[in-house]
Length: 189
Image (cartoon, one colour):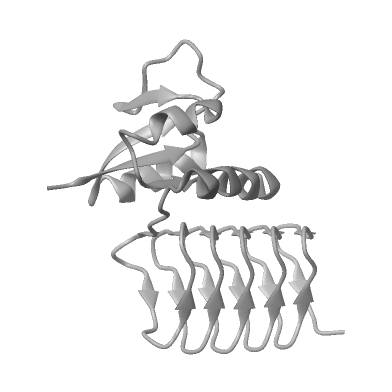
């Protein structure tokens, strides 16, 4: 029997994540931005973020697919207090080393690679083609867009927002809440 999964956020990233999640779960959206809609891409809209406590009896699992890193973190905090569980959504083409450490509530889209001894925290969203190299660290609720690489021994802080085609170089640091624009190379200081 397939389990039910709430996807918090029916925007662009939520719809893309849903395409992977429906392979394993019966999915339902929660979103505050569609008050007049009953569904998005054929997936029922069952409430707003403020409804999470009342939805808990019917749904036990959720993943937050909102790109805003601070909002994503706050929703996970509320959901944790309610006692929701946070599975990972992982595209079949993603590769995760059995020697990597991965948190909960993550979304790893097509062709993501997480190498040996890398650490990826909770609530991390990785777009297609992202590489997390060996012995690097990506902290909770970070968002990394397409074709970016976090190189060996690099450290990405909490709630960081990293654009597309970014290279976080060997031993480089990204601070908590830092925004790295598309096409940037972050070198070690």
